[in-house]
Picture 1 (spheres, one colour):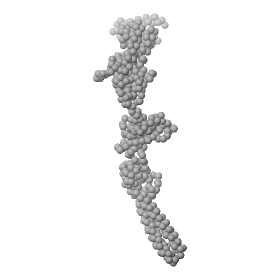
Picture 2 (cartoon, rainbow, N blue to C red):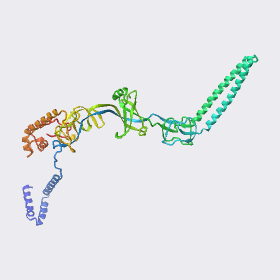
Picture 3 (cartoon, rainbow, N blue to C red):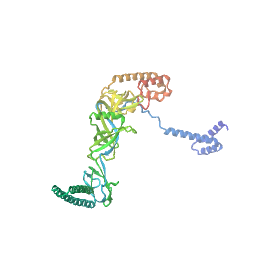
Picture 4 (cartoon, rainbow, N blue to C red):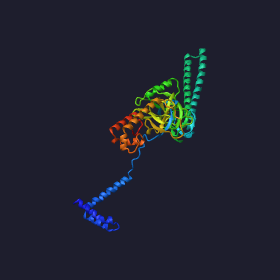
Length: 494
């Protein structure tokens, strides 16, 4: 098939319809042409479909947006001022609320439980009556022991009288010495019987007292474990009720063995270490107390040491076996340079912050962190009290970026290390000037009418960095090195 002849045929077949669109016969001519050239008509339709699809994609595809990265003008930021303040050295741990006494009240004699005197959940004192076992069998045993004691006591008295008479007769040689000795032995035997009877009486009294089940400690009673009418036995596994002491209350928690020397040093010096208990989310303070004791051994399986803290718990907020977050105040360091933790950024070179100067420039400053206490952290090196640091929006900054502070006008003092910041600013300006000179030809060629050194020119160079000359590429690298890189940057730019 001759493509040229085909094109002429297409032009001829469609000429009538193009010249006279009002004439409906062009559609008939077009269909006849398609019938004469089916293969070529398919190619034409496929080409038209691809063209329409490409037009549709171009229409709906999002246009390249202006990069909202760095050097897009002053960035709004939130700031805070470094201050001279004390900071607490604390240890955080997970603790378990542990009562000082938990007693399962078990019967000490057997019998039928006839009465329960407590209400479940009631607060009781030591010695309060909790339940009653049928006392009648034990009262009868006591009466029997007392009767036996009275009988044997009478026999002893009678034996003593006989001994007195025999001793008087022996003085007159009217009775033999053997008879006197026999009577003395009888008195001694009756005395032993009386002592045994007295012990039986005491034992019966004790058993009778055990029929009254009392609280062994102060605390709260739980659910009763045995109902009235059941037969209980001495020392049975299931007690009558459990009494738990609630005030004072202790919390047992663990700290790593690496921190125990610091805690021991403060404890042995006589300092009273404050302990605060928080809820699971560490946002609600439950109770405050003090450190009571430190265990005498390190757990070799976990490398931790157990500590016990005591709480008054008069309000009952600490509940037995409850898990709480413990904050142990080990020491308080005075006169520290303190800033919010949100101001600290981390990069390949370590930790740093952005310090804001009076001319609203954010200069990157490497810092050495100290103790962190909640939302604040101490700075050991790199900042001085009075320096203004960025706490919100630092992820959009680079060293030397311009910033703006929304809200009421805030006076910013000259930061410490201003000379070093000025030197870095001068180096950045020199590098920017060199960049503008080295890339002027590239800007004129690739960036249209963008002014050299403007934000639009810098954005254009970055977006078309693969097409830049070697001289411009080297100048851009030099400019980034002079700018310090900005450890918190997420993107890049010349």
